[in-house]
Image (cartoon, rainbow, N blue to C red; front, side, top):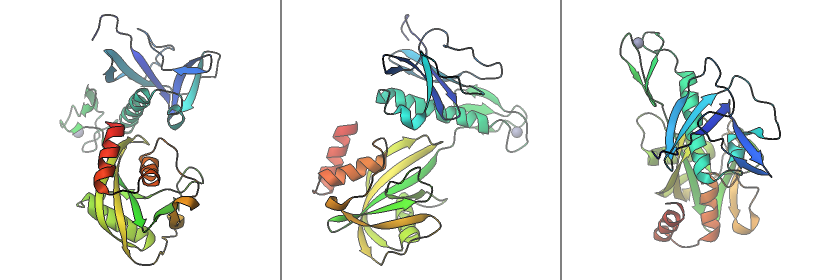
Length: 274
Ligand SMILES: [Zn+2]
């Protein structure tokens, strides 16, 4: 930690992040002290360090009022306003705050938990330790000739179409999850399931793992409770796509740009993101 270290303050109300603004540029507040008083009951969490500067987070019980100098924006929207590293730290901060709020008591004995480490709480009665849980979900880009499968899920926040996705179940491998989700949601069989990349998804605490697969058989039969549409689209006939921040969009963009095979996409993706 350098001697001139300035704390970066990630301050949330629910999923709304406090930003300072000046001349249409947005900043994460920094300084020895936060830009607003820490509420009495709030815990200040240590999230990480960035360029030698500590990054801390706390929650507000209510949103602040918009002013000349400060505003609050949704975490998703902050992706368009901040350098990507700050968006990623904000995502981690949001996950820690969500974990803190939803793990106040021991699930075994009901005693109030005590925070021991930045990402560990312990029960003072039975010593059970609690860490932030990450929900793993898969995304799959299914190819059929010169087209890909895109769906609209009823829980999407918008009218865009995206890739088939679903949560990993207990006892399942990621590849089994890919095959099961495609079958359950669309009735299709897939083959050649291969890894593409992954992304932390702090809405509220997920890890998205992306796969490419090829169509192997079946007719589309949508799972109506989850999907309102699903069909194969060619490059010249694409519907509205998800926003740039998502792994799904990176995978679709890769497919739009690349017509080559597995080796090329792995190298291409790694080069862009690591
Ligand atoms: Zn306990």
